[in-house]
Structures are given as C-alpha cells and as structure tokens.
Length: 380
Ligand SMILES: NC(=O)c1ccc[n+]([C@@H]2O[C@H](COP(=O)([O-])OP(=O)(O)OC[C@H]3O[C@@H](n4cnc5c(N)ncnc54)[C@H](O)[C@@H]3O)[C@@H](O)[C@H]2O)c1
Image 1 (cartoon, helix red, strand yellow):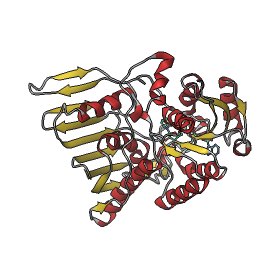
Image 2 (image 1 turned 135 degrees about the vertical axis):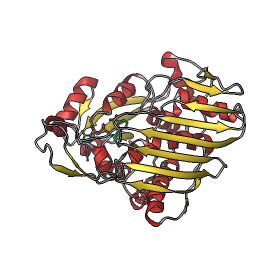
Image 3 (image 1 turned 60 degrees about the vertical axis):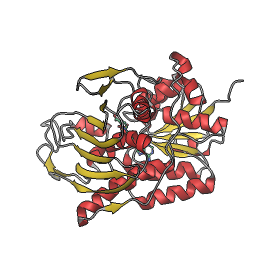
C-alpha cells in the first residue's frame, strides 16, 4: 500500500533552505514539495528554479487548499507572525528554532494550533539522527550506569565581519532579538538531552550580552568601525536539574574566535562523549573502566544531513494517525528553560519550570540505508 504524500511548501528561502529543500525533494517520499516563498522574491525565484517547484507568495501558500504542511524557515524575528499565519490557515506547521521570542507568543500559537487541530513542531530535529539516537540507546541500555552529571559546552564566534554585500543578502539574525547563541545553538544539546532524560525541573544561572556595543569589523562594510547594538544574550552559564535526576552544567557563548562543542554524559559506570548535536552521524565515544575512549558503532539510520526529518516525521504521523516525534510541548519547554535562565540571572533566584512533555518514541534500530531508511519513520 502506498501512502498519499503530503503537499508541502516552504516559507523563507535563506541559507538553511537548501539542505531542507534537497531533502524534502529527494529523501522523504512522504513529502510532495510543491512551492516556496520569501519576502525577497529573488530568493524564492532562485530556489523555486533550483528545486523545480512553484515560486509563490506567502498568501498563495496559505490560500492553497491542497497544501497541508508548511515549513517556516524564516529568521527568528519572523517566526511568530509566519507560524501564526500558517496555523491560522489550518495547515500543519514545522518551524525553524526557536519557536518565537516570548512565552506569551508561544501560548498564542498553542491556542491556535489547538483550535485548528493541526500539528506544530519546532527544530532542531537533529536528535532524530543516528548519533543522538545511539546516545539514547546507550543510556537506556544502562551501558554507563546511572547518569549523575552532564556537561554541555559550546563556544563559537559570532562577530560583525560581513561585507555590506553579505548584509544585503542575509540578515545576521544571531545579533538580533531571539537569535543569540543560547537560542540559535543551545536548543541542539537541550533537545538531545530532553530526548534521553525528559524535562528539566529547575534552573539557575547567568545570561548576558557581553560587549553589546561593538563595531563592524570589516573595512568593506559601509558602517566599518561604527557601533552596532547587539540585542540578544550571547553568553550563558547555567546549572539545571532534570526531573529524572541528572544535573546539567550548560555553558554557551559566541564570544570566541574558535568553534567547538562538548557534550559529556557521565554515569556511574562510564562516560559517553556525544558528538556535535548540530550534526546527524558523527562518531560517538564511550569511556569505560580503563579510561580508554572507544568508538561505539552507530545503531540507527539517518547518518547523513537529514534536516527536514522532523517535518517528514510529522507527515508520516499525519498519514498513519500517530503522534509526531517533535512535539509542541518539547519546543515550548526549551523556550521556557532558556527564558528561565535569563530570569534567574536578573533576580538571582532558582527557577522552577512549569511545563512538561512526553519523551518521544525512539527511532527503530532496524537499520536500512539508502531510500529505505525512511521506513524508520513509518515504524513507530
Ligand atoms: N544558517 C544555518 O546554518 C542554520 C542552521 C540551522 C538552523 N537555522 C535556522 O533557520 C532559520 C533561518 O536561518 P537562515 O540562516 O536560513 O536565515 P536567512 O536570513 O539566510 O534566511 C531567512 C529567510 O527568511 C526570509 N523571511 C523573513 N521573514 C519572512 C516573512 N515574513 N515571509 C517570508 N520570508 C521571510 C528572509 O527574507 C530570508 O530569505 C533560523 O531560525 C536559524 O536559526 C539556520
């Protein structure tokens, strides 16, 4: 029996749209990618031609009764208005992270998705990939014993080094509200850990905008040496406690000239080194008694860059009548956690989280590659 594919469109044809569109077109048969739009029409024209779909306006997508699922790949300051329009039009929505700028906006989106009875989920979806699913398997099978502590550390370098030409092409959203590194990159490790350990119980910590007034550094920029005001937190250091027990030390900042990532899950019987959670199939290392780090074989499919897998999972959920793995509640929790650290930083108190979510079903370890790896989304 063949399942009817889900007609899907994309709003936002910027940098990340390429890998999404490639995967929507080639990787997931459940998706029928039909059109794309952008407020900058040259961008939607270029992507429509490249991927053989229709160049559309946002309104045309929203008014097309055949389109069931829309991906919101705009930058964070547009997420709320675009997702609101998609949900209000009665369409399922998959948005890039984070969901929106405030918890009030998130509550409004929650209300609309419930009224319209549609699915709404938010990136990252990398935790459905091979490395992070294998990490969960290792923990759940008890290979590192009882998990006591976790360290998540992600240094990066976001600086004003663009030329004027680059700026015209692409807004540097990581310097704007809701786009700073805790929101831009923090969600990757958080979602990976949510998928293993469930929701956070409480947090305390510090969040700041280090060096908020900073000059454009590139002599080719028309504003070279003029100051720019960074309107988002770019440095965060927090302690968190999962309801299920483990303690997490979470540090992230974009104030460096190097990039790196470290996610160590430490159990009574071993240490698990999880690779960059922005990726899908990097090697994973396990450290046991003698201290030697050994590579652990990946046990799941989706080892290649499978961005869009969250949307494909939604499409399979729609056709088979099951829950999608990426839930609204999980993305809302990520937003609540990051906001709680910012609030804790302001008043110096520990914050207790109010939201919860169900840990999603794992991806099957029945491994197929090539085009049949999509079977793992059909299985549930
Ligand atoms: N660039 C990356 O490597 C990367 C990786 C993973 C996730 N993301 C996430 O993906 C999202 C987009 O990132 P990007 O790097 O592609 O940004 P981008 O600035 O390159 O592209 C965003 C696009 O959205 C369009 N847009 C904005 N508001 C719109 C609206 N109301 N209607 C239609 N189009 C609108 C812009 O014109 C732009 O073309 C962000 O949330 C980002 O966090 C980016």
